[in-house]
Amino acid sequence: MALNVRKATDKILEMVEEGILDKDTVIMSCLKYMSEDDVADMAHCNEFFLEEEEEEFEDEDGNPISEEEQERANHEQDKLNKEEDGV
Image (cartoon, rainbow, N blue to C red):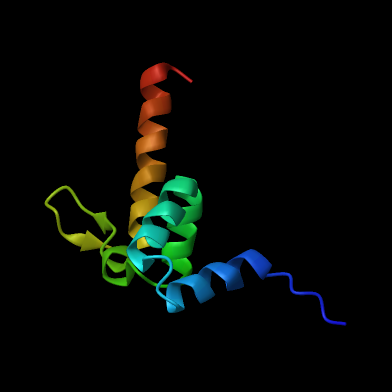
């Protein structure tokens, strides 16, 4: 006998397909229930923000830069902050 580990998920999907539940209501309920990290992870895994992720980092003039360039800039800023703090 196979155990249905997605019983609640399957029931909700079935209710949406049958018109018992409104899909927009289910979407809003899920997003409001999930933590911000869960929502961000889901969006990343499903490539919802693909364009935004590619242009996530910008230089001081607003031009897109690579993640590696941003990491170098962050590292340099950390060094400057430590020098200012006398560390």
